[in-house]
Figure 1 (cartoon, one colour):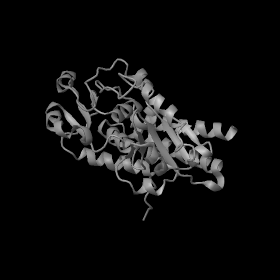
Figure 2: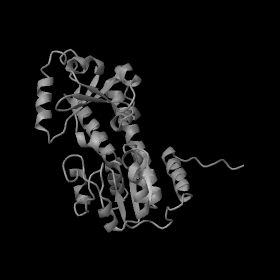
Figure 3: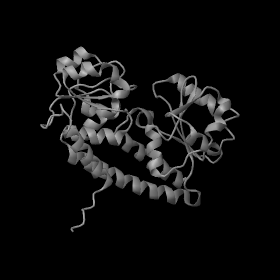
Figure 4: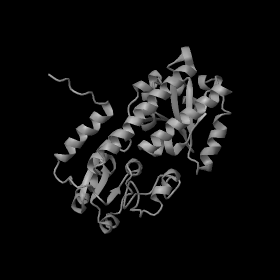
Length: 301
């Protein structure tokens, strides 16, 4: 017998999802020409696959659309909020395919299905699945395979660089902290950013591994020891002056100073859009860019 050819895990994922999608009723075998995306990660993935949607929802910040997507989406009509898309606007666009999420759009799914074929994804932050499913639905499987293959190469390379940087301390524990106006949110391994950090080989505190959901809400700064780690990734909304003031006060707080990351000067400032709001392969690659850039800067200092 001839041995079965080896297929990269990313390629297996896309092939499996492609075959599953083609078996579903309503999924066109011809590539959809007009696509409406109803969550941020789907707009990101469409651009990555070389498709300009005919309709998108408003971004969470940097409105109406994240700066990194504006060159591709500047002329694309908007169909409302991610949490409340306008069915009337979607109808007028006459899409061949609507990419939605059960997390956001379960309630209006029957109405969306009356408008056009719907690709309904479970979550808004599982960027690899979003990319693979959209690639299959839009007959861009090869592009999806290539993107996932390049992603795996980047992760492998950056993981090696991080291992060299931290040497005997690797894997270091991390906390991802979103500094908001009235509280701190700590993202867990199951979040968008957390899944990428775990893939890179970072470790998590016992509290983070034991928690459920995608984040912990710290209403009091006295709870900071719960998120203590070797390395902090810190971000805040750039359009919130109150959040910036909150961070300025936080770094002066007596409960902040004894934390390991603070003591070792391993507090890395990163971009909120890429780390929390993008939800797609392009945003995920921006995360890798930032980690590599900060790691090299820290090594040089």
